[in-house]
Image 1 (tube, helix red, strand yellow):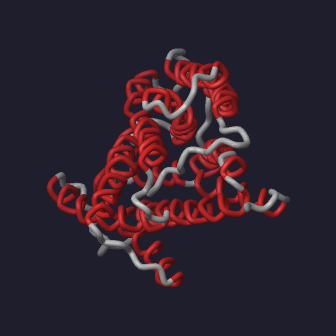
Image 2 (tube, rainbow, N blue to C red; image 1 turned 45 degrees about the vertical axis):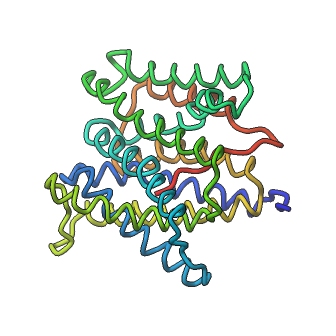
Length: 304
């Protein structure tokens, strides 16, 4: 039985969302220094595996290595990190971090039609309206010439949408078929280890591998910070679900998006047109409409 949410749990929720929101501006710093997709993804896997592995050692929880578990780790590594992060890091080269934070809020909106297609949810006019508002927010960013610093940036919005699309697919896969009897941290750890093994040769072959043995700059520290922030926020998210329930914890989506835009403005000095601020408001309203209500299950959070 989860505890009734109180001020302390609300503070944890806000801190978790603020930490998660850091990942987009940090990703922007990483790509701005010349690092690219598979090299970043490989080290994100490695750092995540180290942190989560230490966490599991402290908890004395083994990592199952049976065939069905290994298959599930591989699936989550692909649809939960490699494919969506390729989209995110590619788009981050061209789009402001604040815009990426708004786009990532599409996850619960895209989860709804996929759930309908899989027969896991019933039609809801309010959720449909939420989905429409989410798409309207993207139009507000892409359509007006005065929205983005360079109108040509709008061409990269479909690439940015790859990430929330795969996160939504992942959430529905987990909701429909479960996690092969594995706990969320076990899944993330296994996916991180297999993901690192899989992406290492790809990073080398695509000449995107990042050699850590050189004088470190802003991009290197930002990469470590991004991986640590994501792994920490996810672990706390899982704990918070057990303490306060899925419906309360699902509200972290608002905080992640809001802080993502705020951090981008404070850390990167990004400025936005009125169209982008309008898109943020519309996206938040859409997020509210598709958020789970009491008695419903929140979509699974996105892994590393």
